[in-house]
View: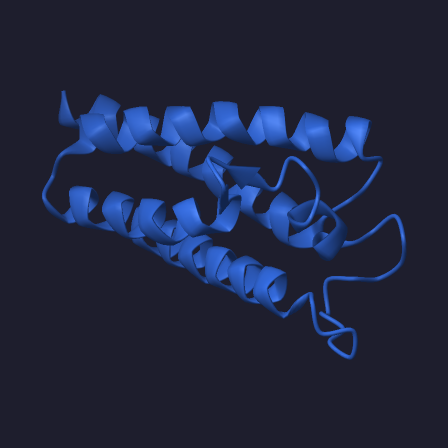
Length: 131
C-alpha cells in the first residue's frame, strides 16, 4: 500500500514541478513553493541543473512514478527496488546541486527526494519479504 501512495505523491509532485516550470515565463505567476530568493522551486527548476537531455527533470518523474506503480502491481519487486535505488542516488546528486551549488532550498524537490528515499526503504523491505 505504501509503495502506491509514494508513487502517487511522486507523480503529483512531478506534475506540479512541470507545471511551475512551464508557467515560470509568466511574470504574474507566483508558485506557492517560491517563498523567497533562497527558498524557491522556480530557481531550481530553471537552473542549469533542472534539465537532463534538454527535458525538465520533472518530465522524467511524470513517467518514472507510474512505472514504479505498475511494476509494483505486477509483483516485479526487484525492478521497483533497482529503480528506487537509481532515483535515490539521483536525489543525492540533485540535492547537493540545489543546496550546495545553488544555495537554494526547493520545497518540491525536497518532497521528491523524500519520496525517493522512502521508496528505496520500502521497496527494500518488500524485496526482503518476497525472497
